[in-house]
Image (cartoon, rainbow, N blue to C red; front, side, top):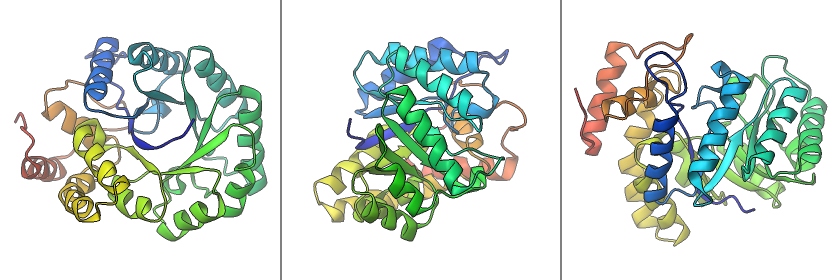
Amino acid sequence: MAFTGTYIALVTPFTKDNKINVEKLKEMVEFHVKNGTDGLVPCGTTGESPTLSWDENKLVVKTVVEAAKGRLKVVAGTGSNCTEEAMEATKFAKTIGADAALIVSPYYNKPTQEGLYRHFKLIAEECDIPVMVYNILGRTGVNIETSTMARLAKVKNIKAVKEASGNINQISDVIVSCPELDVLSGDDSLTLPLMAVGGKGIVSVVGNIIPFELKSLVNAINKGDMTKAKEIHQKLFPLCQSMFLETNPIPIREAMNLLGWDVGAARMPLTPMSDAPKQKLIQEMKAFGLKVNV
């Protein structure tokens, strides 16, 4: 399986009583099918994986896989700072038909580089499903160094990396050092620069609300039309930045609700968006041309 194009880190929709909104989730899948999205990534950071129970994680992944019906790829978020738990979740994702698994580097316990290597290697070899390694120092407290990534690139089933280090030098190093891996951006605002140095696409937050425009950017880059790509990038950039006015996924959830998606409130300890950042978000959404319900 090649990981190329636009993958959307799905928001998990909640009902008013804080349960998984299964029907809304199905509606979101159809929205992305119609807008040409290449793949969906349920139960990642944007899907509030830290506050989903494992039963809820399974429900979300199963719902997305069944709703997708093979029309786009599903990369299930199955990471944990417990190797056994991550392995169990990844095996479940394989069982119900997910195309791949997104596995974040273990957080809080801060493993060594050898520990990171063994964690990903064991899961990938035991679960027999394509694995996308997720490197995000700011969330996990540990960076997967390029030398470790190069070792992982030789492991059966490890096929891609979502690079959210924010360090374009490191990302370029990974692209050069690990030709076996498809490298995707974990930051919307870096989609153009990352793909310009050899990346294959984006795992996107902002794509929850503008998947067509995001796909247009990736298509322009792949066609070598850098003039058009630069034009789209510059239009997207302020909206991408607004997605991080507060901790993700607070702004994207707010944006979806402002657009009438009714995905519910974030789970504690995440809170509703405070007023000043919310007004800035509304301003950028309107400037982009989105019809905001306020």
